Length: 492
Image (cartoon, rainbow, N blue to C red):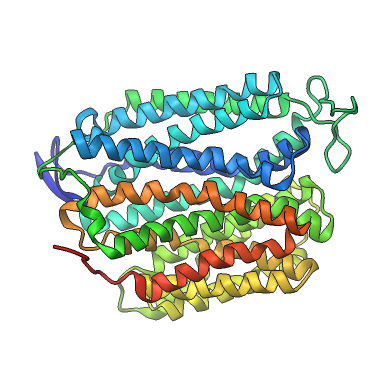
């Protein structure tokens, strides 16, 4: 039995240490899928907004239902672990993953009856259950990836998994938008509004319940197949050699508490911006859903680019020139891949010249990495300042300038989750596992901030000036990167 280090202590592996390529591949597929499904919410919002004739705030309840599940699910998990000990330690990581997948599949299947009875509340309930499944997957998969190999390469494994999570969020607007607004849109009976008129997309195509029923049934089947794959795959098991702490001792560390607020603000700001992009682009330049969702791919694709660059930037090396050239090469390759995907899917409506402004922001992103000097806190600070400036630009400009300013924010959101998480659990020692569950609980920001911005947009009659709401989020993140992350214990 081999022993390896982890964020929460020492764990024993059932057998000799080896390269767990198969296990990592399976886990990476989970990161991809929950990134894909999470970003599908951005497609659901404009769809359900039309179907149920919702105002802006009501449509953002999609995110509230989904991300509040993270809070309640994590809170329940935290309470159980505080009283009885960590449930994952009792049932094992593999069983934890299987439970998460079964709950996620059930949530996806519920979309079928929700569309059949045409109930917005039913949709929100299905999203909440789906979010509970993802909560379990997050709690089980993140630490599992970290301990699935030597401690010194844990960060590399997590960065790789997160990059594929971003790949899922990048292609979801392309594939999901095509399925919902185009391919399945003409299947079945068209949906009718309160006046008995056919509900149509911005391009005049009729909208049907099958447009969301069949995609989510397909997603449910994929989750069940992943569960079967995990069930038959021989995955290593781990036993914690340290006593798990009970109570709430982690809360005595200020950098963790401030980090919880930072996760709340980050997830809230990122989700709020991404959720509004399709409708905001329509408001700015009049692009219909099928065209606007292709631009959304650049927002989430930017996060993928930034995470790959972050993995390289934070790597220790004495050859800075080689690091810089590698980052530039990776940025170019991933940018081209995103463009080709959008180019093909959109029916060749996109020319490189049309998306050329995005390359300028990639250059700005590379410059911000240089300013961060491979330091998590500094990088978080400079990236937060960059997002604040971009939000100011989108508020005080119009047209394509405002559009590309908001789309490029994904590049700078990229490394925030990992940097905040790392800074928040630093030097927690025996309270690391407890602190991690509290941070996952703070994903609740994705349920609250979007609704606040949606309400503000309703009050002022448009999305444009509502973007001062996420500015508040990123001001806090800049402070956390500058000062709030410093390790401090409030009491002994």
